[in-house]
Length: 477
Image (cartoon, rainbow, N blue to C red; front, top):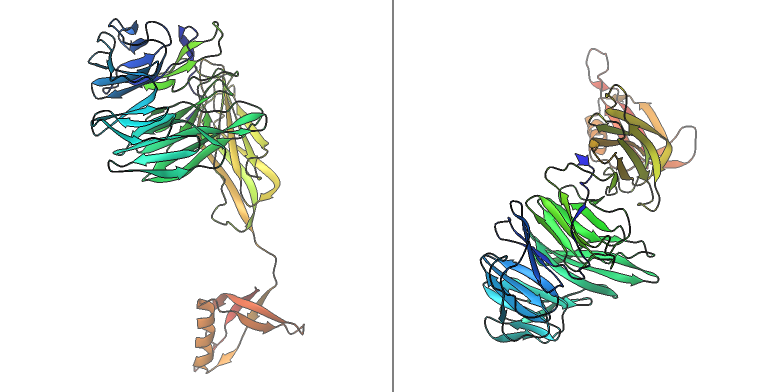
């Protein structure tokens, strides 16, 4: 099922330039770092928003905050803070005497502090690297950190260069989710930015996706996961894109529908809600926004999903695409589903048709005939629309195609073989093994390379039955 994403509503106002978020180990409490004097704010479904009442060491903005069991860590003004218990009422005290901290991570009960001039294991009182870094994360018992395009890994014994991403890549965040470590960043492309997201699974680095609008700001700084959905902050559209881990594909998720800017690490999922921080230095729009992922009552008015390219298992053959079948739940007033297709890998799309509300409420299946559309692959873009108070639900999309086989000559023959088992066996073997044979048409002098496409044996109607008359089809190759 594909539906419109729930819409975002501002729940906390204020121009907050740094809004890192973390969720308690039991998933019931959201902790947000602020740039104000109060420094820490929490949210629970039962109590709503609360400003931390305990004392908070340090000064300046909180730029990172993480959960490690019942202990919380934060970075404030380059210092490292910690509290145990309820983050809304406990005191946040300083850890060590750090002044240049940019991030923290906890692995195997050890606290690691990423600084602008290296990484330090605070628990063991030892430096593990003098490499400057902008992001750090614990993943599968190891520490990953880096800056620009270089990613390092510490395996509790030594630090080594894990990977060098493409030239020009700028790392913004390392965020583990389930069994994946996401590497967020961007490339500077002439007059704009192109987002690039890589991921690590089983110690191997792979590319997830890029967005290529060079005239817009596609720098990605934040990520949050919810079951099999992962949300990426998208400054260009001022909201979030959703990536479905099960079926793949980037979906236009909760958004404002206008250009915005997403602060560092300002996304989280808690109690079935998606929280996103926004900063445009505009009091009318800045703050924290919330979308109900579990039981939404308001939806975006538009959204889309792009599929992978399909070649139908015939990777080297041209296909004639016949039609596209669309099935959906009965549509309400104001709802619609448009299917577009691309035969050039998504560089451009053509509309196949739109399914809209029918007065009888029964318009749940449409077939769109494609007229003389061919290519090696097809890629779909499914656009959902709604009135904002409901969502259409797409249940199935099917594309039918026929393989365009290269035109070749074929011959249908009947042979007479009398009492010659060796020839019959040789004929059957050639057909079974798809052996290439030489064949000269009686009407031509040219010799053709052929295969036996079909072979059927029939006994001659004579008394002895010692003759056969094979019927075969030859195809030129």
